[in-house]
Every structure is written in C-alpha cells, then in structure tokens.
Amino acid sequence: MPPLLLRVNSSAAMLDIKLIRENADAVKKGLSKRDPAFAGAVDSIRKLDEDRRRIIVETETLKNQRNVASREIGQIKSKGQDASSAMAAMKKVGDDIATLDQKLREMDEKVHRELLLLPNLPHDSVPAGDGLANREIRTWGKKRKFEFKPKPHWELGENLGILDFKGAAKITGSGFVSFRKQGARLERALIQLMLDIHTRDHGYMEISPPYLINEASMIGTGQLPKFAVDMYGLKDDPLYLAPTAEVPLTNLHREEILKEEQLPIRYCAYTPCFRREAGSAGKDTRGMIRVHQFDKVELVKIVHPGHSYDELEQLLLNAETILHILNLHYRVILLSSGDMGFGAAKCYDIEVWCPGIDAYQEVSSCSNFEAFQARRMNLRYKGGDGKNHFCHTLNGSGTALARLFIALLENGQQADGTIVLPDALKPYWGGDLVIR
RNA sequence: GGUGAGGUGGCUGAGUGGUCUAAAGCGCCGGUUUGCUAAACCGGUGUACGGGUUAAACCGUACCGAGGGUUCAAAUCCCUCCCUCACCGCCA
Picture (tube, chains in turn red, green):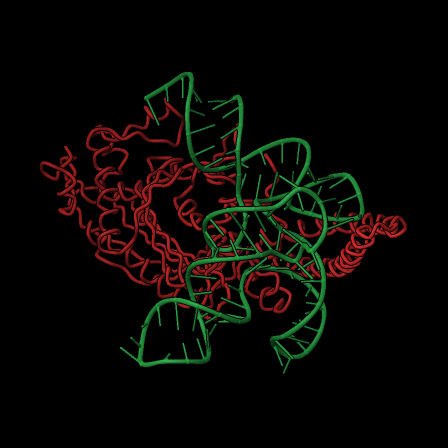
C-alpha cells in the first residue's frame, strides 16, 4: 500500500492548524471532553508547527535569492556575456534549498499525520462523558404488548425460511446472511420505500455510487488513516469496500469549490455496507444484529456552515419519518462526547425497539461533522464575501436495513409464527402483507 | 490488457529552456457613455502557504493532471503514476 498521505499541505487536516495555533487551550479543552490524552498531542503539534514555520522563512528567502539571480543570469547570457561565476554561486544556494525542502517536507508530513489523528471538537450542546452520559431526547410510539413470548428474529427468520445464515456462512463465512424468498423481497421493498420517501418528500437526489473506494476518499470522510483495521481492503489494488455510502456521496465533491447557491446539496443512496467489525468479535454473534455486510439507505448533506445545525435536526426528522411510516417504536439519543464517532461534532442515534431480543437497536446515526470532513477533502464554497470557506457536511442513515428488518420481524410476529407487515409496504409488496 | 492522442486559469485556447511576471478571446465584477435594454470603451478578475498589519495595504514562496529528477533557471527536457478521448483485444 502506498503511504496514506494525500498532500503535505497541513491545512488539509481535520482541525485547522491555525485554530490550534491561536486557540490551543480551547482545542485542548474540547478534545479533552473526549479524552484527556489529546492535550499532549496538541502541544506536540504546536511545537512542530513553530519549527516548521522557521524553516519556511529560511527556504523562501533562499528561493527568492535564486529567482532574482537566475533572472540576471538570463539577461547576462542574452547579451552574450559570461555568467559562470554567478551560476556557480547559485549552485550552492540550490543545494541548500534542496536540503531545507527535504527537511520541510518531512515536517509537513509529520504535522499532517498528527492532525489526521485528532478527532473533531464536540459541539457545546454535547454532554460530556462516556456512554452513561448519553441523553434521551424523545421517544415515539410504544412497546407492543404480547400475549405470548416474542421470539428473536433468527428463530422467526429461519422458521419462515427467509433468513439463511448457514448458506451465507458456506459462501463467505460467519457474520453474513443470505435473504430468501419473502425475506429478499422485503429487503428490496424497504430500499424502494425509503428511497421514494427521501427523494419525493424530503428533497434528496438519488445517487447510485461505486462501492469500491480509493484512499483519498477514505481519508476525506475520516475512515483512514485511523480506522484502517475496520475496513475491507483489496489485495491487488489500493481500494476499500465502502463501509457506508457516506464515503462515496460526500466525496463526490472532494477538492471542489462550490457556488454558494448550490448549497445545500442533499444526496441519498442505497448501497451495501461492508465492515470488518474488528473490535467487536464475540459481540452480538447471534442473528443479524451485527453483520459484516448490510444494506443501508444513506442521507448526506453538504451545507452552508450557518445552517448546519438546522439541517441536522431536519436530517434526524427525515430518518425518523421512515419509522413513523413503518409504525415502529423508537427513541432518539443524543450521544455524549465519549460515545460519538471520530469526526462528529454532534450526533443523534435512533434506536428502534426489538421485542424478540428485548433491546433497542441503533438503526440510524445522524451527525454534523461541521468542517471536519470538508477540511480533510478540501471541500469549499465561494461565499458572498468573495472568499472560499469550508462547507459543513452531515450524514445519517435513512435507515440501516438489517436492524430495521429485525424490528419488522420481531414487532410484526404473531402467535402462529407469521409476520404481519405495515401497510406502508403495500405498493412494494404484492399480495397480502403477511410473511408465512 | 494493447496502441495512439491528450490534460494549461471559471471556460476556450496559445505557449517546446531565460521580459512566462502565462498571450488572446469568452465569461464574471466595477466604471464611463446612454430614454430603458443592448452595444462600445476603460479598469479589474485564481488558489494555498509564510512574513507583515489592530485590521488592511503590502512583500515573498509555490501551483500549467500528480509525484520525482536534470539545470543557475522548467508549463517547456527526462522518469514514474493518474485521468480523459479514440481504436483494437477480452468480457457481463
């Protein structure tokens, strides 16, 4: 694999080096909300940055000398005169420049590398602490009452012959599932339903992107370099299987300067998602709560920084709409600083109730990344002031399929083992809304 | 996979080692003229980093697909890679 560096321009990393330079204490305080260990990293970056700037001044002074002298040499030679002494003197300057440039390149890379490993600063409204500090924002619907003991989805699914774990294990290995018959059809119906709602009612443009992703894109949205172990990579090419459509959708505009009136951009896509779940071995091994491949409809927004928190609330409502339509009880959780993803400034999870496994399961995670991803991928817009500014990016699942499927089976189950599906699926189903 | 042609500013497009400090045109912004509009004319119009400033102005460096190299000096010469287009081969 080639090195994980796009360019040595240190401004391309997640937190602005200038922010660290000018507000080191605020950055330390914000990052410490996630983990106190980041304070040391901030100090180290500041030190490197100072050294780096000293060298920039040195090398640019020399380059200026060279440029001036070279111009003079050109003029002397064009008059047919001898310039060999000036050329010899510049040879020495050229060597010095080469040495300093090399040193500078190394320092740039080092600063860049360290910046890429810093997570985003949590928004002020994010509660400090670990998972226990997560805050329930609201609930919708309520738990269904059963006159019998509800079964988990793996029993329901295998009894009905719509989920096939053995077959998938044979083809691939553990942690995969194969859908059969009405199971496959339900998967397809849900994808259709969600894409229709988001494109027709919520104003998203449908995209069907590639599922193989290059390194630059994976760095852009923040999966690399820190989380390489969570991704499936290809053996013969520097490509990764998309862990979420967030990656291709957001990177569609990497290295672009958008017009202000193009914002907000709203994309949605259905894609399969591939995750190694490297840190989760032995967790949720039963059924398809945690699988290495699952389908998902994803929502992505690229917006003006002034509107990103309004857009986050909208995004959350867009995702919740799917659960309203399917009549599934859920709760919305505001994640604490310690529980949030690496790039998020603020994140809500939507958790749907699954009676068979007697637990709430996350089906959507809606995050505002502010300029974290935009800075990594150099995604800007030209503002009314004529200057370029970083966009804010957001994404949320709208929603993840495997767990939604689980919720539908477990909530829709009848005493006789059949499943009654919500009316909203009717246009996508055909026949009566029962899996038997 | 093979062969060939390409990649230059928002766009078109010239430029094959030294006034390239990137021509020209279009577009865009401002101005002049003008019943209005249009036209004409004049001026301006990239990005990033560093220095500088209360802030600007301003100064410097880099950038002609990307990265290396040769040279006092590279859009220009050499090497590697990426992408686009055309044709051939293979293939759903």
